[in-house]
View 1 (cartoon, rainbow, N blue to C red):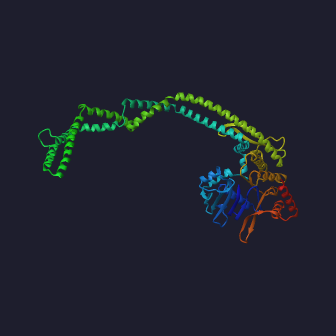
View 2: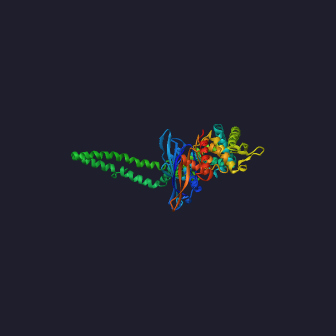
View 3: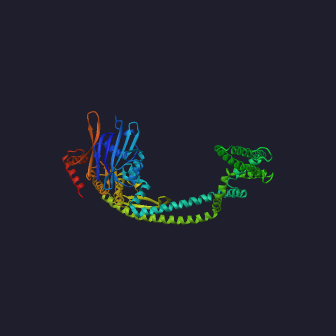
Length: 562
């Protein structure tokens, strides 16, 4: 619910505050431009597009701020939090939400949601959950088949909503199965080629039987065998130095001689050193056998081992060239088998999917039929209820029927919905998109909203001259219906008819102000004699006509009657 809207430098309005609040708020006035700016200001808060043309002449920018009362928790609160904004709790499960919009004279715009800057699109998202707008252009939306189907679905309530949810689930399942089956059939040859190539690759890897890290081990072994002679010489020299096979001095002999010399000295410090030399003797003896062992390892399989190693490296090199790395080849061996089973199962999968597709199509047909039945039932009730409302709206002979016919399958079902209006007996029912005048369309739209609001209310309705093209008794009934709509929702109506404004619980008027140099407009709340004068002005053009004032009081009495 909108609690208050403040306009600054918007068109002809210098600054104005609109205290709106609950119930039915009527906005009237002498200046059409001023009323237009009020509607434009509301539209800015709803995320509608705007340009620098809305900025008041001589001003740097135009701004609109609005205070809304919204549920403290729910879709709106979640969207505000996603945008980084805050709500101000006020108790009773409700909270205040501040929305703002400004447009500079250069055309730059800025929006705020809950005190934080946000894209204007966020305002539009919030408006989808907060308000329904009906203006001269918005009424045209009732002419579209989609809008008419949406109106029927709203009226259908839980029965249609449940059937539609079931249908959409069946529709998505059918689409998923159909897409998978189509892809399998379309790509059958490609998948067969993939299976053939994968089968050959797996056979090649299995024949080579590579082991993890084998290529690195073979590279090291080949390098060792290729340098066998140099390694033998180095190993022999090291062995000779550690443990000579002849009478030549070696490391062990020299260490033994040094140890004995220190022991003979009889000094405690030197004796300690001799102990360390003894340890070195033992270590030298152990090391003396290692080079000999390395020599034995250099040619355990004879002179042909290097050729065998190189041949094996060539086999593994072929796998590396084909698959990038040996690890990739081993991974393909592990995962490729499962993929090959999947590819080889294509024919069986196609058969299974074809059966699943038949079952999904049957489920879709059943869900579509249930949705059509729910809509058809709701259509009969909606047509009867709207027809009753139209008779109260000075269209006593009009009859509205809601036709549900089969059309192509979509995510919304298989139903085309058309609102058919017969304005008088004997007339052929025609779609409101072609057979309704502007005034008739306004009343049809209002009747539909009144009927739907009884089962699916929205927080706020904004009507911009919903009474266009009507007058007299019809206008009184429009006002009465707006008042009834305000029993469940907040209603804001810009009107030029006294018969409509008289039913409002809150009356605002746009008035001209002139300081001698600049003419601007302001918005004032009316009550008592001021409101009687405004109703009289709407009736006769003059606010002080005695006859008009008498008529105004009668209208206000009628509007105030329960």
